[in-house]
Image 1 (tube, helix red, strand yellow):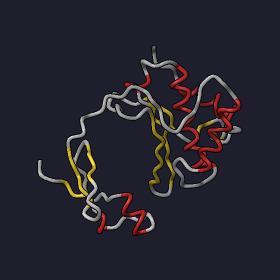
Image 2 (spheres, rainbow, N blue to C red):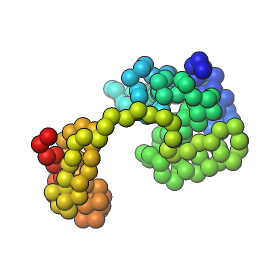
Image 3 (cartoon, one colour):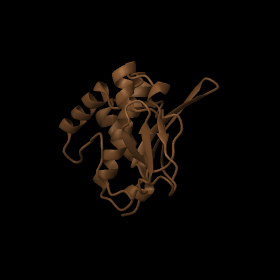
Image 4 (cartoon, rainbow, N blue to C red):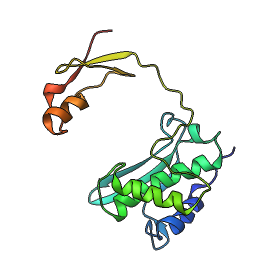
Length: 177
């Protein structure tokens, strides 16, 4: 299927589900675009950055993942990312898939039946093999990764012993391979 223009769909969803809160003077508060061909492991993302006091944010949808899929998958992904933008830019809350996200997702899903917004998708994604083994220095749990990572910690240990905060006592170290 050919890629569809995202801006008209954005404006439609903004009107239907977000009370036109994602535009100011008819201009979106976020940039919306298709990715180049490098975004291959996630269907889309919302990103915000602040440069010299100016907030810039964007929604990017993956061309390689979504292009061969039905339009309902594009709609679902765009709407998912628009919820992130709405929480950040309108509610001014720093949240990923928390209570505000889930409430808005459920409301959108109850208002229409054309597509379903979800937290996770099941789109076909080619992932690299998990070939690096990391071990928590605290509990000894083993984790597999696609690449070596620096300064990562065992989530279970951090939650259990440090109230969810990162701590060097829970570092994951990689064995030589």
